[in-house]
Length: 77
Image 1 (tube, rainbow, N blue to C red):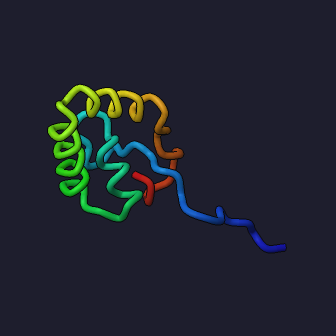
Image 2: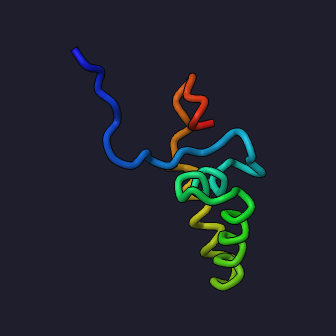
């Protein structure tokens, strides 16, 4: 019997490695296959372009809804 694997794209996870505050930017960057610095720059640019407050609200929402990586998943960390 063959083992089943997750088909389709992996959902974004918050990262404990390369995190600055909660790992949201690093998790989104990893999901998009960007470097964490690029993800943080994109978030900062979005925040500045949206007069800061919407960017902070989006970050807080993502912090709440993005799961932590599964235990033992070294690729997700």
